[in-house]
Amino acid sequence: MTSRQLSKHATRIGFWVLVALIVVIAVFPFYYAVKTSFTPSSELFRVELWPSRLDFTNYVQIFSQRSFLQAIFNSILVATSVVFIALLLGITASYALGRVRFRGRSTVLLVILGVSMFPQVAVLSGLFEDIRALNLYNNPGALILSYTIFTLPFTVWVLTTFMRQLPMELEEAAIMDGATPWVIITKVFLPLMWPAMATTGLLAFIAAWNEFLFALTFTLTDSQRTVPVAIALLSGGSAYELPWGPIMAASVVVTVPLVVLVIIFQRRIVSGLTAGAVKG
Amino acid sequence: MSTPVTESAPIAARHLARHKRSTKVRRQRVRAAWIFLAPMLVVLVLVAGWPLLRTFYFSFTDASLSDLSDTLFIGLENYLIYEDGRWYGVLADPIWWRAVWNTVYFSVVSVSLEVVFGIIVALVLNAEFKGRTLVRAAVLIPWAIPTIVSAQMWAWMLNDQFGIINHLLMVIGIIGEPIAWTADADYSMWAVIMVDVWKTTPFVALLVLAALQMLPKDCYEAAEVDGIHPVKVFFRVTLPLITPALMVAVIFRLLDALRVFDVIYVLTSNSTSTMSMSIYARQQLVEFQDVGYGSAASTLLFLIIALATIAYLYLGRNQLKLGGD
Image (cartoon, rainbow over the protein chains, first blue to last red):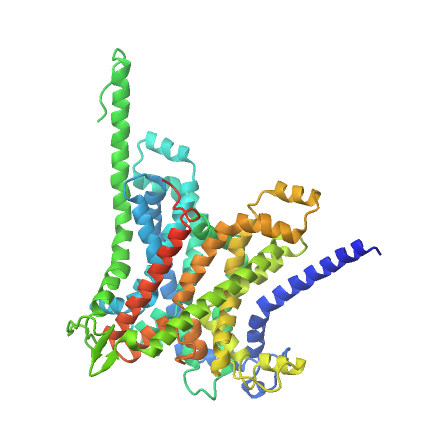
C-alpha cells in the first residue's frame, strides 16, 4: 500500500470514528434515561450499561399519581391553546408584514424581534401583576397568556418569511377579481400556508411544552402544574434520597412524543428553524 | 367607484384613472394591514410592553409580592444607596456581581464550545455518506429533549455515588474517587456548561449546515484541482462564507445564554457558585418576595441584554439585515 492510499484509509476511518462519536454523545444520555426508567430503585446502585430485565415499577408508580396525569393534561391544554392563539394572530399579522408595503413595517418587525430577545425574568413582576388583575394566578390561563410572549414573535417572524416567498401573481389575480384582504388570506394563502403553519405550530408547541420559569412561578399547587415543573419538583423532597427511577420514567414519558415528532418532521423543523434565523 | 373611462377619452386620462384606482387599492391594503396587525400588537403590549414598563417602575419602589398595590416610590434605593457608612442595593451586592460573572462566563464558554462543535457536526453532516439521514435524526435528539429533562438526565448521570460518568471515568482510571459534579463548586459550572453544550450544539449545527448547503460547489472543485489542503480551504473559503450564518447562530445562542435559568436551577438550584442573573432576580422576586429589589436586578439584566443586542447589531449591521424594504 502506498502512503497515499494509507492516508486515504486513515481519513476514512477517522471520519467514521467521528460519526460514531457524534451519534453516541447525542443519543447515549437519552438511552441511559430509558434504561434507568426500567430499573427498579433497589438495583440503581449497580451501574450498568444494559438493563438486566424490563421492570415497569417506576412507570406504574408515576402513572398512579393523579398529579402527574393532571400535569400531562395541563401541559397538553396549555401547549395546544398557545399554538392555536399564536397561529391565529400570527397568520393575519404575517400577511400584513409579508405582503403589504406600508410605513412603519420595519419598525414593527424590529419590535417583534426585540420582544423575542426579552429575558423572561424582566417581565416576571409585571406579568405577575397582570395575571393577578385578570384573576388567573395558579391557573393554566396564566401560562397560556404568558407563553404568547415568546411563541407569538417567533410565529409571526417565521410565517412572514414564508408569506414573502409566495408568488405575487396569485395575489394580483385575486385583487383583480375584487377579493378583499380577508378573502385573500383565507381563500388564497391559507391553503398554501399549511406546511409552514404545521412547522411553526410544532416549534411553538415544543417551546410551550418545555417552558419552565413562568410555569414554576405562576402555578402553586400540584393540580395546576405542567410536566417540566412536575419533573423538576419530583426531586424537591430530600437531597439524599432522590427517586431517580420515577424521575427518569416521567422524563421518558414527556420526551418520547417530542423525539418521535421531531424525527418524523425533521426536514420541516430544520427549514423552520433556519427560516426563523438565517433569513431573519 | 372607479371613474368611467370612455373609448374617446385621451390616453392621459385613462392613465390617471388607473393610477387613482391602484392608489385606492393600495390605501385599502395598508388599512387592512394595520387592522390585521392590531390583535397581535394588542397581545404583545399586554404580555410584553406593559409588564416590562411595570417591572421598570417596580424597581424604583419597595413593592412586595404579597401586596403589589401598596407600594412606595423610593428612587434608586434598590440599585444603590449609602446609609450608615455602608452601601446597599443590587449594585453593592457581591452575590449579584458573582451572578453577573457566572452568567457572562457561562455564556462565553458555552457559546464558544457550541460554535466549534456545531461546525464540526455540520461539516460531518454535510459530507455524503451512507446513513446520513439517521445521523442527522440522532443529532436532533438532544435539541428535542426539554431542558428540564436533560438537566435531570445529566444530574442522574453525574450523580456522585451511582452516576455512570464517575463510574466510567474510574474504570478508565482518569479519576481515583467519585466527584460530586453538581455539588462541588470547582466542577458545578463545568457540569452546567456541559449540559448546555450537549443540548444546544444541534441548533448551531443545523444553522451552519443550512449555510454549508448553500455554498457554491465550483470553488471546491477548483481548490481540489489545484491541490489545496482541505484545512486551508476550510479557513480560507468555507469559514468566511458561513460567517453570516454563524453570526446569527451566535446572537441567538448568546441572548439565550445570558438569560439562562432552568438548566442551572435544576442542576445546582440556588448555589452561588453557578447562580445566574435570572436566578438571582427570581430568587429576590419570588422566594424573598422583594419585588422592588428583584425588579431592579431584572431591569439591570434587561439593560445588559439590550446593550449586547445593540452592540451586536451595530457591529454586524451588514450581516443581519431585516429583509424586505
